[in-house]
Each structure stands twice: as structure tokens, then as C-alpha cells.
Image (cartoon, rainbow, N blue to C red; front, side):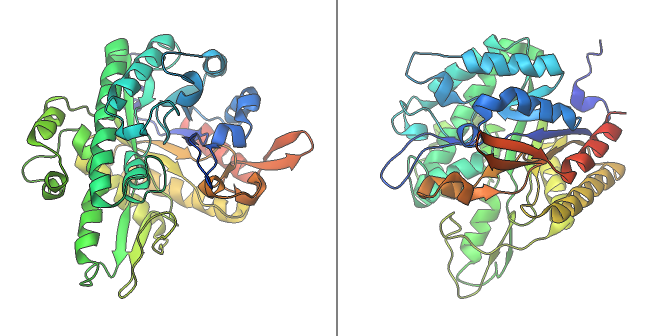
Length: 418
């Protein structure tokens, strides 16, 4: 058996993902969102893994529902995840496990702002790594940590509902500390067998970014897109552009020294890129918060934006990169065009010498938009048609219907396996 890590074998690895956003907290006007419940993955997990096999996916980005395995402090229930990870092994699919995909269990008061959040998430990570040490060695400590920080820390959209730059700094540093402790906990269990796939959302800013009313904000946004990853990798030094912001909002020199001394690195840097959403536009004379409820307009920069983001992350963090999520939400013909164009772009980057090791279509089957949380409409009103398989409402629940995007993806995946 080869001891070469999968990301060092020279191939382009094709996989998919199952949407695993979990924000289980509720309050008036906001209902819990659990994508596994919405898509019926809890009941249909075995069939869903068969879907991954059917498209020749080598890996599947998939998350442990922390709020399910830890429903109360000190109580653990791994029964469902035991079955699913055994299912991965039975089918020969590599799980890349998301340990945190937006939400915490409801018993953590204040969520990321709880003073013991880092120790809570580290304990959970260590227990998961130990329990599945023979089934999973690839981990994403936090999926899209900067979106976590924005939604929970700047936009007051998700718990703990902090707002503005002060909230952003508080939640960014808290998530970053938990990120570090998570990776260290998994590494302590698995040693050199562990592979860490860091994953963040690519954020590009264009338009009237030099307009007087936008210049300062746009400059901050360009740098803060990398803030959590910079913190966890120990890259926030005396010359970091956001150091004044961090210090102005309570980040001490001792905190920054802790990150420098305890830095963790990605084995693979995952980049999530959605052509219709990853480039936000500033417009002269118009204010948009950039929050989910008040978004700036976007521009589709297609494969040009994709190539820029992959090159940027590779250069910034010095690790192999993978396209960790991509798709367009549209009809089948449009999805097929993006699949063809994005695969060609990735292959072109590889031919130019960029170390791109993975391609991920997200998701394996359709999902439901996060607006479900703030709505009283049925899930069907929030369906996003973006998967390799369609979700179809039937009398017995959600059927999965293979569409031509799955067939095309399988062609690419089977070629990549050779």
C-alpha cells in the first residue's frame, strides 16, 4: 500500500459534497435550519452514498452534525454517524469530514462567544477523531470560517448576533482559536495520518471600490476575506493590514502571540467559488451592508475569477489547492456549461503548473436556501436547483432524480481516476 498522501499522487481528484449547514437555535421569527433534516439525509443516507458511488465520486465532503451527536453537555450519541461512516468504508468513498459547518449545539450559550467554546469544540473533535480513526483521516476543522464570522459577527444574521467591526473581530478570533484547538486535537489522535483540508469562501470585490464612500470599507473587506486563515496559520504579524482593526476591538498582543506560537497549516487549501456570488460589486452612491439580508450586487466573472482565487490562495498559504465547492443554481443546460468550463479551467491551471488537487461539485443533490430559517413557507419554496441529482417531492418524501449533470460529472471523474 502506498504511503503517499492522496493529494500528492499527481492526479486531479473528483468529488462532491452534501450540504450540511446546521443552525439549530430558534427564536421568534427564526426556525432551526438543519440541511440533513430538510433533505431527508438522516433517513436516506445509504441511498445518498450510493448516489456518490454512481457518479464515481472519489471523495465526499460531508459533515458530522455536532448538535445531534452532542445534544446535551456531556452526553454523546454517535449511533447515526457510526452507520454513515461505516457506509463510506463499505463503498470505498473517502470522507472529508466537516467538523463545524456554521452552528453549535444549543446547549452552548452564546455559541462562538462562549468563553469555553474552543475547549468544547476541541473535545468534540478529539472524540470524533478517536472514534473514527480507522474510517476517516481527512478533516476540515471549520467550513468557511469567514462566512461564520460575517454572519454571526458582523451582520447579526446568525447566533450570537454580533454586529459591526467589533463583532467581526470578536467572532473571528473566537472561531480561529476553536479552529486551532480542533486541528491540534485531531492531530494528537491521528498523528501523521491526518490530512487537514482548510476550506474558505472566496470573496472578491469589484466596481466602485475607489469611490470615497467605499474606499475604506472595500480595502478592509479585501483583507478580511483571509482573516481567520491568517490567524490560524500565524500570519497576523506587525505588518498585517488588519492589525489596527484587531487591536482597536480588543485583540491583545498576548492573543496574537498565542496564534503565532500555536499556528496550524493546511495540507490542502480548499477554495469555494460560485461564479454568480463570489464577486461583490460596490456601487457609487449606494450603500449595501453586504449582509445576507442587504447584499451588494454581484458580477459573474466566470472562470477568470475562479483562476484568480485558486492562484491567490495557493500563493498566500503555500499549499496545494482544491476547488472545494462550485456550481451554478440554474437549469441543467447552464449547470452543464459551468461544469465543462470550470473543469477545463482547473485542468488548464494544472497544465500551467498550479498544484490543484481536487474538484468538488456542490452539492451531490439539491439543497434548500438559508432563507428557510427566516421564513414560514414550506421547504419547497426554498429549493435550490444546483445538484447532480434533483430533489423531487413525492407522497413518500424526497426522491432523488439523476440529471444529465451527474452523467457529465461521472465522465470527468472516471477519466480522473485513470
